[in-house]
Structure formats: C-alpha cells, structure tokens
Image 1 (cartoon, rainbow, N blue to C red):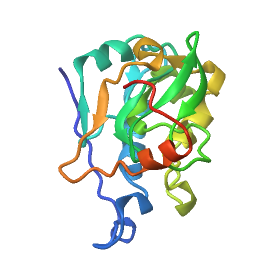
Image 2: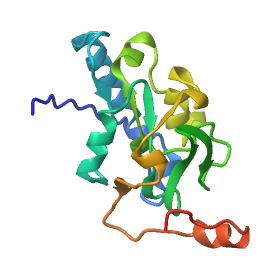
Image 3: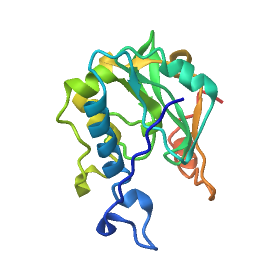
Length: 194
C-alpha cells in the first residue's frame, strides 16, 4: 500500500491546556488542511478515488473500507462511541438521509463525526479553495463545514446497510463518558441499533 506521511504541528496557542477539554480547541485542522493541499497538488480531479479522514483514536472494521469504495459523491454511515452516546448515525429511508441520531452540538447542520463520511476526490478538486476554518466558531463544526461546502443532505449516500451497521468506533485509552444516554432516556428516545 503506497502512502505519504505528512505532518505539521498545531500552534501552541491552539493546544488545550492541562485542565481544558480537547473538544474546546480546533483539533487536527492544520493537519487536514496540509493533507487537502497535498491531495490537490498530487492528484487529478478525474481520478476515481476517495478521501477519508481516518484518525489514530478510531478502530476500523475491514468492512468499512468495502463501504467506502461504494461512494459516488459523499457517503455517510454510523460511528460508535461518539458524542457521549453509544453511536451517532444518519437515519436513512430508502438510501437517503432523513434525519440524524445524535445528541452533542444539536445545532450542527451535519451532526456526524469525521469518521462517519468519505468524499469523492472530484469534490475536493471542485471546491479547491476549501480549507478547514481554524476560528473559534468552528469548534465542533469541522464536519458540517466541509459537508455543507461540498454537498447537501439530500445528496448524501447512506452506506453500511442504510446506516444500520457500525464499522468504525472512537476507541481511546481513557474512560468513555456515555452520559447522554440518560438524557435520551428521559426524553423518551431509545437506541435503535442495539
């Protein structure tokens, strides 16, 4: 498998302090931007390829990569152990996103995790000026930023058996906080994939 290893440090002023949650700071934006720059400089817009922002704190089932290969434009699927829930996911009807099962950052236009979608390379080239916005207003909005630029909800492709199978999970070597489950229960909302 050929690969390129790119790296760029996050500026110190954007790194979380010892007592600050990591989600309060923009995470990985500089790294994603250098990756987008490299992709645009080293690929052709007509190449049949896909862009997926994999992360070191995720666990991937091999079936995820079979699903990613199906993406024609922008594909979406569930992500496990994210957003203080057992999973977040698009709710799909007949292959189209109807709504979203999520809890954290309720006002997100596309309430999914970075691990929950892939984008066809031609869109990365089509929106050649797009970079992740490192402003404070973008915290928790990276996914919505890129998806809102490159697609609409009605154009999203539901994968992983109509978004009913989980093939990627946030797995960290720390205690997971599934605190939103109690709040869902109090609101009368139940998990539908368990």
